[in-house]
Image (cartoon, rainbow, N blue to C red; front, side):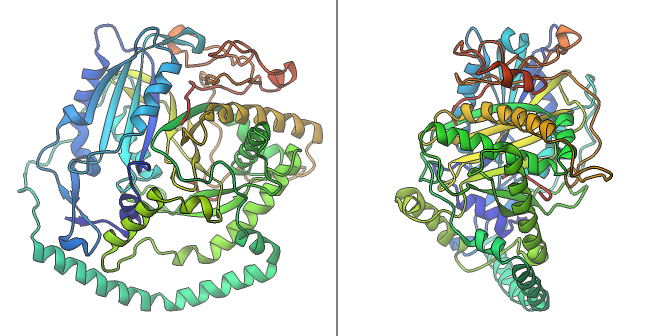
Length: 565
Protein backbone atom coordinates (compact mmCIF):
# COMPACT_ATOMS: atom_id res chain seq x y z
CA UNK A 1 0.00 0.00 0.00
CA UNK A 2 1.30 3.40 -0.98
CA UNK A 3 -0.52 6.66 -0.25
CA UNK A 4 -0.78 9.23 -3.04
CA UNK A 5 0.75 12.62 -2.35
CA UNK A 6 -1.51 15.64 -2.39
CA UNK A 7 -0.11 16.72 -5.76
CA UNK A 8 -0.65 13.28 -7.32
CA UNK A 9 -4.18 13.06 -5.94
CA UNK A 10 -5.05 16.52 -7.23
CA UNK A 11 -4.87 15.22 -10.80
CA UNK A 12 -7.53 12.66 -9.86
CA UNK A 13 -9.76 15.26 -8.26
CA UNK A 14 -9.46 17.65 -11.23
CA UNK A 15 -10.54 14.99 -13.71
CA UNK A 16 -14.02 15.24 -15.21
CA UNK A 17 -15.47 14.04 -18.51
CA UNK A 18 -14.44 17.38 -20.03
CA UNK A 19 -10.94 17.37 -18.54
CA UNK A 20 -9.19 13.97 -18.77
CA UNK A 21 -6.00 14.06 -16.74
CA UNK A 22 -3.74 11.67 -18.62
CA UNK A 23 -0.50 12.52 -20.39
CA UNK A 24 0.35 10.77 -23.64
CA UNK A 25 2.88 10.43 -26.42
CA UNK A 26 2.61 9.69 -30.12
CA UNK A 27 5.55 7.71 -31.47
CA UNK A 28 6.06 7.19 -35.21
CA UNK A 29 7.86 3.92 -36.03
CA UNK A 30 9.52 2.53 -39.12
CA UNK A 31 8.07 -0.62 -40.71
CA UNK A 32 8.97 -3.83 -38.85
CA UNK A 33 10.94 -6.63 -40.44
CA UNK A 34 9.03 -8.89 -42.79
CA UNK A 35 6.91 -11.42 -40.97
CA UNK A 36 6.71 -9.45 -37.70
CA UNK A 37 3.28 -8.32 -36.48
CA UNK A 38 3.97 -5.06 -34.61
CA UNK A 39 0.91 -5.38 -32.38
CA UNK A 40 1.67 -8.92 -31.22
CA UNK A 41 5.39 -8.19 -30.88
CA UNK A 42 4.80 -5.02 -28.84
CA UNK A 43 2.16 -6.66 -26.69
CA UNK A 44 4.53 -9.51 -25.86
CA UNK A 45 7.43 -7.13 -25.17
CA UNK A 46 5.42 -4.88 -22.84
CA UNK A 47 3.86 -7.83 -21.03
CA UNK A 48 7.30 -9.31 -20.37
CA UNK A 49 8.57 -6.05 -18.85
CA UNK A 50 5.45 -4.84 -17.00
CA UNK A 51 6.81 -6.10 -13.67
CA UNK A 52 9.71 -3.64 -14.03
CA UNK A 53 7.35 -0.63 -13.91
CA UNK A 54 5.47 -0.08 -10.61
CA UNK A 55 2.73 2.06 -12.18
CA UNK A 56 1.82 -0.77 -14.58
CA UNK A 57 0.61 -3.16 -11.88
CA UNK A 58 -0.98 -0.93 -9.27
CA UNK A 59 -4.49 0.48 -9.03
CA UNK A 60 -6.39 2.95 -6.87
CA UNK A 61 -8.21 2.22 -3.64
CA UNK A 62 -10.25 4.92 -1.91
CA UNK A 63 -9.98 5.58 1.82
CA UNK A 64 -13.14 4.94 3.89
CA UNK A 65 -15.64 7.82 3.72
CA UNK A 66 -13.15 9.67 1.46
CA UNK A 67 -11.47 11.29 4.44
CA UNK A 68 -8.03 11.27 2.79
CA UNK A 69 -6.23 10.73 -0.50
CA UNK A 70 -6.53 7.29 -2.12
CA UNK A 71 -3.80 4.67 -1.95
CA UNK A 72 -2.07 2.54 -4.56
CA UNK A 73 -2.46 -1.22 -4.14
CA UNK A 74 -1.19 -4.06 -6.31
CA UNK A 75 -3.70 -5.23 -8.90
CA UNK A 76 -4.71 -8.90 -8.75
CA UNK A 77 -4.26 -9.30 -12.50
CA UNK A 78 -3.36 -7.19 -15.52
CA UNK A 79 -5.63 -7.56 -18.53
CA UNK A 80 -3.23 -6.88 -21.38
CA UNK A 81 -6.08 -7.08 -23.90
CA UNK A 82 -7.48 -3.93 -22.27
CA UNK A 83 -4.18 -2.16 -21.70
CA UNK A 84 -2.65 -2.83 -25.13
CA UNK A 85 -5.09 -2.25 -27.98
CA UNK A 86 -4.86 -2.50 -31.74
CA UNK A 87 -6.18 -0.15 -34.39
CA UNK A 88 -5.72 0.22 -38.14
CA UNK A 89 -6.03 3.27 -40.31
CA UNK A 90 -8.32 2.96 -43.33
CA UNK A 91 -6.81 3.56 -46.75
CA UNK A 92 -4.86 5.63 -47.60
CA UNK A 93 -3.56 5.70 -44.01
CA UNK A 94 -2.11 9.22 -44.02
CA UNK A 95 -1.09 11.39 -41.08
CA UNK A 96 -4.33 13.37 -41.27
CA UNK A 97 -6.25 10.20 -40.43
CA UNK A 98 -3.77 9.41 -37.67
CA UNK A 99 -4.36 12.86 -36.25
CA UNK A 100 -8.11 12.26 -36.16
CA UNK A 101 -7.65 9.01 -34.25
CA UNK A 102 -5.37 10.63 -31.66
CA UNK A 103 -7.90 13.40 -31.03
CA UNK A 104 -10.60 10.83 -30.31
CA UNK A 105 -8.45 8.56 -28.14
CA UNK A 106 -7.15 11.45 -26.06
CA UNK A 107 -10.71 12.53 -25.20
CA UNK A 108 -11.43 9.24 -23.38
CA UNK A 109 -10.72 8.84 -19.66
CA UNK A 110 -8.98 5.80 -18.21
CA UNK A 111 -10.80 3.14 -16.18
CA UNK A 112 -9.99 3.77 -12.51
CA UNK A 113 -10.76 0.18 -11.56
CA UNK A 114 -7.63 -0.89 -13.45
CA UNK A 115 -3.98 0.27 -13.55
CA UNK A 116 -4.07 3.73 -15.11
CA UNK A 117 -2.33 3.18 -18.45
CA UNK A 118 -3.08 2.13 -22.02
CA UNK A 119 -1.15 1.68 -25.27
CA UNK A 120 -2.56 1.71 -28.80
CA UNK A 121 -0.66 0.17 -31.71
CA UNK A 122 -1.95 1.88 -34.86
CA UNK A 123 -1.07 0.13 -38.12
CA UNK A 124 -1.71 1.03 -41.74
CA UNK A 125 0.29 4.27 -41.64
CA UNK A 126 1.62 5.23 -45.07
CA UNK A 127 2.19 8.72 -46.37
CA UNK A 128 4.81 9.33 -49.05
CA UNK A 129 4.32 13.06 -48.67
CA UNK A 130 5.81 12.77 -45.19
CA UNK A 131 8.37 10.09 -45.94
CA UNK A 132 6.37 7.31 -44.29
CA UNK A 133 6.80 4.08 -46.27
CA UNK A 134 4.20 1.34 -46.41
CA UNK A 135 4.13 -0.69 -43.20
CA UNK A 136 4.90 2.21 -40.86
CA UNK A 137 2.95 2.26 -37.62
CA UNK A 138 2.33 4.53 -34.65
CA UNK A 139 2.31 3.88 -30.92
CA UNK A 140 0.02 6.05 -28.78
CA UNK A 141 0.66 5.81 -25.05
CA UNK A 142 -1.60 7.03 -22.26
CA UNK A 143 -0.80 7.26 -18.52
CA UNK A 144 -2.68 9.15 -15.81
CA UNK A 145 -0.92 12.23 -14.47
CA UNK A 146 -1.64 11.01 -10.93
CA UNK A 147 0.78 8.19 -11.65
CA UNK A 148 3.55 9.85 -13.68
CA UNK A 149 4.86 13.25 -14.68
CA UNK A 150 7.04 14.03 -17.67
CA UNK A 151 10.26 12.80 -16.08
CA UNK A 152 8.68 9.57 -14.85
CA UNK A 153 7.13 9.02 -18.28
CA UNK A 154 10.56 9.21 -19.91
CA UNK A 155 11.83 6.61 -17.43
CA UNK A 156 8.92 4.29 -18.30
CA UNK A 157 9.63 4.58 -22.01
CA UNK A 158 13.28 3.81 -21.35
CA UNK A 159 12.29 0.51 -19.75
CA UNK A 160 9.77 -0.51 -22.41
CA UNK A 161 11.90 0.44 -25.43
CA UNK A 162 15.24 -0.93 -26.57
CA UNK A 163 18.48 0.76 -27.52
CA UNK A 164 19.04 -1.53 -30.49
CA UNK A 165 16.83 -3.38 -32.98
CA UNK A 166 17.30 -6.62 -31.02
CA UNK A 167 15.05 -6.55 -27.89
CA UNK A 168 16.78 -7.09 -24.56
CA UNK A 169 15.65 -9.90 -22.28
CA UNK A 170 13.35 -8.83 -19.42
CA UNK A 171 14.72 -8.55 -15.90
CA UNK A 172 14.02 -11.54 -13.62
CA UNK A 173 10.68 -11.49 -11.85
CA UNK A 174 10.39 -11.76 -8.10
CA UNK A 175 9.88 -15.45 -7.37
CA UNK A 176 8.04 -14.63 -4.14
CA UNK A 177 4.43 -13.80 -4.99
CA UNK A 178 2.77 -11.87 -2.18
CA UNK A 179 -0.93 -12.04 -1.50
CA UNK A 180 -2.98 -9.27 -3.15
CA UNK A 181 -3.14 -6.12 -1.05
CA UNK A 182 -6.50 -5.56 0.61
CA UNK A 183 -5.99 -3.11 3.46
CA UNK A 184 -8.91 -2.96 5.86
CA UNK A 185 -10.97 0.02 6.96
CA UNK A 186 -9.15 0.54 10.26
CA UNK A 187 -5.72 0.29 8.61
CA UNK A 188 -6.67 2.93 6.08
CA UNK A 189 -8.26 5.24 8.66
CA UNK A 190 -5.30 4.83 11.00
CA UNK A 191 -2.90 5.71 8.20
CA UNK A 192 -4.95 8.79 7.31
CA UNK A 193 -5.11 10.19 10.82
CA UNK A 194 -1.42 9.48 11.26
CA UNK A 195 -0.75 11.58 8.17
CA UNK A 196 -2.94 14.38 9.50
CA UNK A 197 -0.87 14.56 12.67
CA UNK A 198 2.45 14.20 10.88
CA UNK A 199 1.67 17.10 8.58
CA UNK A 200 1.11 19.42 11.55
CA UNK A 201 4.52 18.44 12.87
CA UNK A 202 6.10 18.99 9.46
CA UNK A 203 4.54 22.45 9.17
CA UNK A 204 6.01 23.49 12.53
CA UNK A 205 9.43 22.18 11.48
CA UNK A 206 9.30 24.20 8.27
CA UNK A 207 8.45 27.53 9.94
CA UNK A 208 12.09 28.76 9.99
CA UNK A 209 12.50 27.88 6.29
CA UNK A 210 9.22 29.57 5.44
CA UNK A 211 10.23 32.74 7.26
CA UNK A 212 13.53 32.72 5.39
CA UNK A 213 11.73 32.18 2.06
CA UNK A 214 9.35 35.08 2.74
CA UNK A 215 12.33 37.30 3.49
CA UNK A 216 14.07 36.24 0.28
CA UNK A 217 10.92 36.85 -1.74
CA UNK A 218 10.49 40.29 -0.16
CA UNK A 219 14.09 41.12 -1.08
CA UNK A 220 13.55 40.02 -4.69
CA UNK A 221 10.30 42.00 -4.86
CA UNK A 222 12.00 45.12 -3.50
CA UNK A 223 14.82 44.84 -6.03
CA UNK A 224 12.41 44.46 -8.96
CA UNK A 225 9.00 45.82 -8.00
CA UNK A 226 7.88 46.15 -11.61
CA UNK A 227 8.37 42.41 -12.23
CA UNK A 228 6.32 41.50 -9.19
CA UNK A 229 3.56 43.88 -10.27
CA UNK A 230 3.48 42.22 -13.70
CA UNK A 231 3.16 38.76 -12.15
CA UNK A 232 0.27 39.90 -9.97
CA UNK A 233 -1.56 41.46 -12.90
CA UNK A 234 -4.22 39.22 -14.50
CA UNK A 235 -3.54 37.91 -17.99
CA UNK A 236 -5.67 39.31 -20.82
CA UNK A 237 -8.78 37.29 -21.64
CA UNK A 238 -8.57 35.26 -24.87
CA UNK A 239 -10.35 32.33 -26.54
CA UNK A 240 -7.93 30.07 -24.62
CA UNK A 241 -9.35 31.09 -21.23
CA UNK A 242 -12.79 29.52 -21.20
CA UNK A 243 -14.64 26.50 -19.85
CA UNK A 244 -13.71 23.69 -22.21
CA UNK A 245 -15.63 20.77 -23.71
CA UNK A 246 -14.66 17.11 -24.05
CA UNK A 247 -13.57 17.13 -27.71
CA UNK A 248 -9.88 17.64 -28.37
CA UNK A 249 -7.84 19.11 -31.22
CA UNK A 250 -4.22 18.12 -31.79
CA UNK A 251 -1.37 19.71 -33.73
CA UNK A 252 2.29 18.76 -34.14
CA UNK A 253 5.51 20.22 -35.53
CA UNK A 254 9.27 19.73 -35.27
CA UNK A 255 12.41 21.85 -35.16
CA UNK A 256 16.08 20.97 -35.27
CA UNK A 257 17.51 20.73 -31.74
CA UNK A 258 21.09 21.64 -32.74
CA UNK A 259 19.84 24.67 -34.68
CA UNK A 260 17.68 25.79 -31.76
CA UNK A 261 20.65 25.49 -29.39
CA UNK A 262 22.82 27.40 -31.87
CA UNK A 263 20.20 30.17 -32.09
CA UNK A 264 20.09 30.41 -28.30
CA UNK A 265 23.88 30.76 -28.16
CA UNK A 266 23.90 33.30 -30.95
CA UNK A 267 21.33 35.50 -29.20
CA UNK A 268 22.81 35.09 -25.72
CA UNK A 269 19.67 33.42 -24.42
CA UNK A 270 18.56 29.97 -23.32
CA UNK A 271 16.79 27.29 -25.31
CA UNK A 272 13.68 27.87 -23.24
CA UNK A 273 13.80 31.60 -23.98
CA UNK A 274 13.88 30.83 -27.70
CA UNK A 275 10.95 28.41 -27.37
CA UNK A 276 8.83 30.91 -25.42
CA UNK A 277 9.67 33.64 -27.92
CA UNK A 278 8.64 31.68 -31.01
CA UNK A 279 5.52 30.40 -29.26
CA UNK A 280 4.67 33.99 -28.36
CA UNK A 281 5.15 35.02 -31.98
CA UNK A 282 2.96 32.18 -33.20
CA UNK A 283 0.18 33.04 -30.75
CA UNK A 284 0.44 36.72 -31.67
CA UNK A 285 -0.06 35.95 -35.37
CA UNK A 286 -2.80 33.42 -34.69
CA UNK A 287 -4.87 35.80 -32.55
CA UNK A 288 -4.17 38.71 -34.87
CA UNK A 289 -5.45 36.62 -37.77
CA UNK A 290 -8.68 36.09 -35.83
CA UNK A 291 -8.84 39.82 -34.94
CA UNK A 292 -8.50 38.91 -31.27
CA UNK A 293 -4.98 40.08 -30.35
CA UNK A 294 -5.06 41.80 -26.93
CA UNK A 295 -3.00 44.91 -26.21
CA UNK A 296 -1.21 43.29 -23.26
CA UNK A 297 1.14 40.34 -23.56
CA UNK A 298 -0.14 36.81 -23.08
CA UNK A 299 1.17 34.97 -20.02
CA UNK A 300 2.38 31.36 -20.05
CA UNK A 301 2.44 28.90 -17.18
CA UNK A 302 5.78 27.08 -17.35
CA UNK A 303 6.02 23.85 -15.31
CA UNK A 304 9.34 23.44 -13.51
CA UNK A 305 10.65 20.02 -12.52
CA UNK A 306 11.89 19.44 -8.98
CA UNK A 307 13.08 15.94 -9.88
CA UNK A 308 16.70 15.20 -9.05
CA UNK A 309 18.91 13.79 -11.79
CA UNK A 310 18.49 10.02 -12.01
CA UNK A 311 15.25 9.97 -9.97
CA UNK A 312 12.84 7.65 -11.80
CA UNK A 313 10.14 7.51 -9.11
CA UNK A 314 6.57 7.26 -10.46
CA UNK A 315 5.38 10.42 -8.69
CA UNK A 316 4.86 14.05 -9.65
CA UNK A 317 7.70 16.36 -8.67
CA UNK A 318 6.85 19.65 -10.26
CA UNK A 319 6.03 23.27 -9.55
CA UNK A 320 5.65 26.19 -11.92
CA UNK A 321 6.22 29.83 -12.77
CA UNK A 322 4.65 32.40 -15.10
CA UNK A 323 6.35 34.18 -18.00
CA UNK A 324 5.27 36.90 -20.38
CA UNK A 325 5.37 35.84 -24.03
CA UNK A 326 5.84 39.27 -25.59
CA UNK A 327 2.79 38.91 -27.83
CA UNK A 328 2.46 42.69 -27.77
CA UNK A 329 5.82 42.99 -29.58
CA UNK A 330 6.07 42.40 -33.34
CA UNK A 331 9.88 42.41 -33.66
CA UNK A 332 11.28 38.90 -32.89
CA UNK A 333 14.52 40.11 -31.26
CA UNK A 334 12.74 42.68 -29.10
CA UNK A 335 10.26 39.98 -28.10
CA UNK A 336 13.15 37.68 -27.15
CA UNK A 337 14.66 40.35 -24.90
CA UNK A 338 11.28 40.88 -23.25
CA UNK A 339 10.92 37.12 -22.67
CA UNK A 340 14.45 36.97 -21.22
CA UNK A 341 13.61 39.75 -18.79
CA UNK A 342 10.38 38.04 -17.74
CA UNK A 343 11.92 34.58 -17.26
CA UNK A 344 14.84 36.03 -15.32
CA UNK A 345 12.49 37.76 -12.89
CA UNK A 346 10.29 34.66 -12.53
CA UNK A 347 13.29 32.45 -11.83
CA UNK A 348 14.43 34.80 -9.09
CA UNK A 349 11.00 34.75 -7.46
CA UNK A 350 10.71 30.98 -7.77
CA UNK A 351 14.23 30.44 -6.46
CA UNK A 352 13.34 32.36 -3.30
CA UNK A 353 10.48 30.00 -2.38
CA UNK A 354 11.17 26.77 -4.31
CA UNK A 355 12.55 24.88 -1.32
CA UNK A 356 9.41 25.43 0.77
CA UNK A 357 6.79 24.81 -1.91
CA UNK A 358 4.75 21.86 -0.59
CA UNK A 359 4.46 18.78 -2.79
CA UNK A 360 1.96 17.22 -0.41
CA UNK A 361 -1.08 18.38 1.50
CA UNK A 362 -3.54 16.61 3.76
CA UNK A 363 -6.85 17.79 5.17
CA UNK A 364 -10.03 16.05 6.19
CA UNK A 365 -12.31 15.27 3.25
CA UNK A 366 -9.87 16.46 0.56
CA UNK A 367 -11.22 14.07 -2.12
CA UNK A 368 -14.76 15.39 -1.71
CA UNK A 369 -13.91 19.08 -1.41
CA UNK A 370 -11.37 19.35 -4.25
CA UNK A 371 -13.45 17.15 -6.57
CA UNK A 372 -16.51 19.33 -5.88
CA UNK A 373 -14.54 22.41 -6.90
CA UNK A 374 -13.53 20.73 -10.17
CA UNK A 375 -17.14 19.73 -10.87
CA UNK A 376 -18.28 23.28 -10.23
CA UNK A 377 -15.87 24.51 -12.91
CA UNK A 378 -17.18 21.91 -15.35
CA UNK A 379 -20.86 22.66 -14.74
CA UNK A 380 -20.81 26.47 -14.56
CA UNK A 381 -19.40 29.40 -16.55
CA UNK A 382 -17.44 30.64 -13.56
CA UNK A 383 -14.13 30.31 -15.43
CA UNK A 384 -15.45 32.48 -18.26
CA UNK A 385 -16.27 35.31 -15.85
CA UNK A 386 -13.20 35.20 -13.59
CA UNK A 387 -9.87 36.93 -14.36
CA UNK A 388 -7.27 34.64 -15.91
CA UNK A 389 -3.87 34.26 -14.20
CA UNK A 390 -2.45 32.59 -17.36
CA UNK A 391 -3.37 32.14 -21.01
CA UNK A 392 -1.51 29.01 -22.06
CA UNK A 393 0.75 26.28 -20.67
CA UNK A 394 4.16 25.77 -22.33
CA UNK A 395 6.25 22.85 -21.14
CA UNK A 396 9.66 21.52 -22.23
CA UNK A 397 10.51 17.90 -21.41
CA UNK A 398 14.10 16.71 -21.89
CA UNK A 399 13.86 13.44 -23.81
CA UNK A 400 16.28 10.69 -24.88
CA UNK A 401 19.34 11.61 -26.94
CA UNK A 402 19.44 8.20 -28.60
CA UNK A 403 17.04 6.32 -30.84
CA UNK A 404 14.43 4.03 -29.29
CA UNK A 405 13.27 0.74 -30.80
CA UNK A 406 10.00 -1.12 -30.34
CA UNK A 407 9.79 -4.71 -31.53
CA UNK A 408 12.87 -4.06 -33.67
CA UNK A 409 11.41 -0.92 -35.33
CA UNK A 410 13.13 2.43 -34.93
CA UNK A 411 11.14 5.30 -33.46
CA UNK A 412 11.69 8.27 -35.77
CA UNK A 413 9.57 10.86 -33.95
CA UNK A 414 8.07 11.26 -30.48
CA UNK A 415 5.37 13.90 -30.04
CA UNK A 416 3.92 14.74 -26.61
CA UNK A 417 0.15 14.89 -26.09
CA UNK A 418 -0.65 16.70 -22.85
CA UNK A 419 -3.61 18.22 -20.98
CA UNK A 420 -6.06 21.07 -21.61
CA UNK A 421 -7.96 22.41 -18.61
CA UNK A 422 -10.75 24.83 -17.79
CA UNK A 423 -9.34 28.32 -18.15
CA UNK A 424 -6.37 27.04 -20.17
CA UNK A 425 -7.74 25.49 -23.34
CA UNK A 426 -4.33 25.28 -25.05
CA UNK A 427 -1.27 23.33 -23.94
CA UNK A 428 2.01 23.43 -25.88
CA UNK A 429 4.45 20.71 -24.86
CA UNK A 430 7.74 20.00 -26.56
CA UNK A 431 10.17 17.15 -26.08
CA UNK A 432 13.69 16.66 -27.32
CA UNK A 433 14.39 13.40 -29.13
CA UNK A 434 17.89 12.72 -30.51
CA UNK A 435 18.43 15.86 -32.65
CA UNK A 436 14.78 16.99 -32.77
CA UNK A 437 12.42 19.21 -30.82
CA UNK A 438 8.98 17.67 -31.28
CA UNK A 439 6.05 19.95 -30.43
CA UNK A 440 2.63 18.61 -29.49
CA UNK A 441 -0.28 21.04 -29.11
CA UNK A 442 -3.49 19.87 -27.43
CA UNK A 443 -6.55 22.08 -27.21
CA UNK A 444 -10.28 22.13 -26.73
CA UNK A 445 -11.70 21.61 -30.21
CA UNK A 446 -14.51 24.10 -29.61
CA UNK A 447 -12.16 26.89 -28.50
CA UNK A 448 -9.22 26.19 -30.84
CA UNK A 449 -10.36 24.01 -33.77
CA UNK A 450 -7.42 25.06 -35.96
CA UNK A 451 -4.62 24.29 -33.50
CA UNK A 452 -2.40 22.95 -36.29
CA UNK A 453 -2.18 26.51 -37.61
CA UNK A 454 -0.43 27.51 -34.38
CA UNK A 455 1.97 24.57 -34.74
CA UNK A 456 2.85 25.69 -38.28
CA UNK A 457 3.31 29.28 -37.15
CA UNK A 458 5.83 28.12 -34.52
CA UNK A 459 8.09 26.87 -37.34
CA UNK A 460 7.65 30.12 -39.27
CA UNK A 461 8.45 32.18 -36.16
CA UNK A 462 11.61 30.13 -35.59
CA UNK A 463 12.72 31.05 -39.12
CA UNK A 464 11.84 34.70 -38.48
CA UNK A 465 13.89 34.75 -35.26
CA UNK A 466 16.82 33.13 -37.07
CA UNK A 467 16.68 35.82 -39.75
CA UNK A 468 16.41 38.59 -37.16
CA UNK A 469 19.38 37.19 -35.21
CA UNK A 470 21.48 37.01 -38.39
CA UNK A 471 20.60 40.60 -39.20
CA UNK A 472 21.31 41.81 -35.65
CA UNK A 473 24.71 40.13 -35.52
CA UNK A 474 26.21 38.73 -32.35
CA UNK A 475 26.57 41.69 -29.96
CA UNK A 476 25.73 39.92 -26.70
CA UNK A 477 27.91 36.84 -27.06
CA UNK A 478 31.16 38.34 -28.22
CA UNK A 479 34.01 37.02 -26.10
CA UNK A 480 31.89 34.94 -23.74
CA UNK A 481 29.99 31.66 -23.67
CA UNK A 482 26.31 32.05 -22.89
CA UNK A 483 24.13 29.41 -21.22
CA UNK A 484 21.83 27.42 -23.45
CA UNK A 485 19.35 25.82 -21.12
CA UNK A 486 19.36 24.39 -17.65
CA UNK A 487 20.35 20.80 -18.04
CA UNK A 488 21.15 21.15 -21.73
CA UNK A 489 24.00 19.09 -23.11
CA UNK A 490 26.06 19.11 -26.26
CA UNK A 491 24.18 18.81 -29.51
CA UNK A 492 23.88 15.17 -30.58
CA UNK A 493 25.04 13.86 -33.93
CA UNK A 494 22.90 14.70 -36.94
CA UNK A 495 20.09 12.28 -37.62
CA UNK A 496 17.33 11.97 -40.22
CA UNK A 497 14.81 14.77 -39.87
CA UNK A 498 11.03 14.50 -39.67
CA UNK A 499 8.87 17.54 -40.32
CA UNK A 500 5.05 17.72 -39.70
CA UNK A 501 2.13 18.41 -41.88
CA UNK A 502 0.06 21.59 -41.96
CA UNK A 503 -3.60 21.72 -41.17
CA UNK A 504 -4.47 23.53 -44.31
CA UNK A 505 -2.57 26.58 -43.07
CA UNK A 506 0.14 28.28 -45.04
CA UNK A 507 3.59 27.22 -44.06
CA UNK A 508 6.97 28.80 -44.34
CA UNK A 509 9.28 25.84 -44.05
CA UNK A 510 11.37 24.36 -46.80
CA UNK A 511 12.75 20.91 -47.52
CA UNK A 512 14.60 19.07 -44.85
CA UNK A 513 17.64 17.04 -45.84
CA UNK A 514 16.55 13.63 -47.13
CA UNK A 515 17.57 10.52 -45.28
CA UNK A 516 20.32 8.39 -46.75
CA UNK A 517 18.16 5.33 -47.11
CA UNK A 518 14.46 4.86 -47.66
CA UNK A 519 14.23 2.58 -44.67
CA UNK A 520 15.63 5.34 -42.44
CA UNK A 521 13.31 8.07 -43.60
CA UNK A 522 11.31 9.94 -41.04
CA UNK A 523 7.96 11.71 -41.51
CA UNK A 524 9.53 14.69 -43.30
CA UNK A 525 8.15 17.04 -45.89
CA UNK A 526 9.18 20.32 -47.43
CA UNK A 527 6.97 23.15 -46.36
CA UNK A 528 7.31 24.60 -49.79
CA UNK A 529 5.43 21.59 -51.13
CA UNK A 530 1.70 21.00 -50.82
CA UNK A 531 0.04 20.64 -47.42
CA UNK A 532 -2.82 18.25 -46.76
CA UNK A 533 -5.23 20.69 -48.30
CA UNK A 534 -2.93 21.34 -51.23
CA UNK A 535 -1.94 24.84 -50.18
CA UNK A 536 1.49 26.22 -51.03
CA UNK A 537 4.03 27.94 -48.81
CA UNK A 538 3.25 31.46 -47.72
CA UNK A 539 6.28 33.23 -49.15
CA UNK A 540 9.61 32.37 -50.73
CA UNK A 541 11.38 34.36 -48.05
CA UNK A 542 9.96 32.40 -45.13
CA UNK A 543 10.53 29.18 -47.02
CA UNK A 544 14.21 29.92 -47.48
CA UNK A 545 14.75 30.98 -43.87
CA UNK A 546 13.01 27.88 -42.57
CA UNK A 547 14.91 25.50 -44.82
CA UNK A 548 16.50 23.81 -41.86
CA UNK A 549 13.37 23.54 -39.73
CA UNK A 550 11.69 20.12 -39.64
CA UNK A 551 8.01 19.48 -39.82
CA UNK A 552 6.29 16.71 -37.93
CA UNK A 553 3.34 14.45 -38.77
CA UNK A 554 0.31 16.67 -38.74
CA UNK A 555 -2.12 16.52 -35.90
CA UNK A 556 -5.44 18.29 -35.83
CA UNK A 557 -7.61 20.06 -33.46
CA UNK A 558 -7.25 19.39 -30.42
CA UNK A 559 13.42 27.74 -17.70
CA UNK A 560 14.55 26.53 -15.33
CA UNK A 561 14.26 22.82 -15.33
CA UNK A 562 11.13 21.95 -17.29
CA UNK A 563 8.60 19.14 -17.27
CA UNK A 564 5.31 18.28 -18.83
CA UNK A 565 1.96 19.08 -17.46
